[in-house]
Image (cartoon, rainbow, N blue to C red; front, top):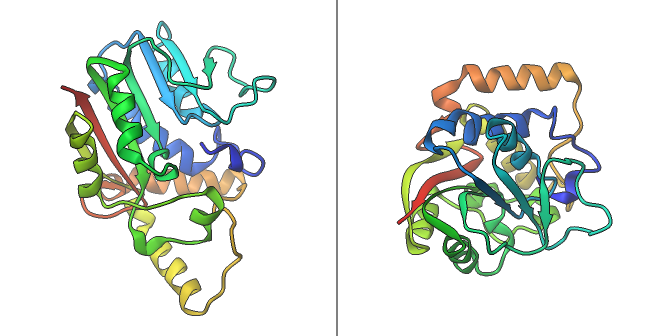
Length: 234
C-alpha cells in the first residue's frame, strides 16, 4: 500500500486491499512452497507482507521501501524494515503496485530477480489500462498503466517465467470505466487525489463479498483494474 494513502485508508479493513491480498497471497499460497525469506519491494505500509507473514510464520519477512522514515517504520512489529533490497536471497518476492512508480521498470524488476534465489516466486501487480488514467494516478505518482501482455513480457525480459497472470477487480470494472470516462468527458475532476476513501464497515463488507462471489469475473484473463503475474526465477 502506498504511504500516501495511509492517512485516509486503513488496509486492514478496506475492501480493495483485502481482496487484493486474498487474491494474490492467500489464494495463491500453494504456489509459494515454504519460503524462508520473503521480501516485499516498495512495501509502503507493509500490509501485504504482514498478510504473508501470517501464512508463513517462520519466514524472515523484510519490507523494503526507500521512502521509509527510520524513526517511524510501519506498525507491524514482526517484520524487518530496510531502505534497500537486502543481500539475502529471497524465496518469495512481492512487487505489488510498485513498477508503475519508477522510470525504468525493467531495471527494478531485473534487480529484484537477481537478488532472489533460483526458483523463487515473484508476485507482481500494476494498475491496468492506460485509458483508465485519472487524478488517482497523478496523486500516487504513477508513470504508466499496463495491459497484462505488457506485464508478462516485462517479467520474461527480467528473467522470470510466468506461471499465472490476469486481471483483478473485473467485477467492478464496468462501473469504474463509466465513472472515470464520464468525469473525463464532462471535465469534472478533483485534480490529483486518491479514488480510495475510508468506508463504513457495511460498504467494505458489501464490496468484499461482491468481489468474492463474482469469483471468475473478479480475477480473469481479460479485464480489470489491476494486472498481475506470478512468476518463477529461471
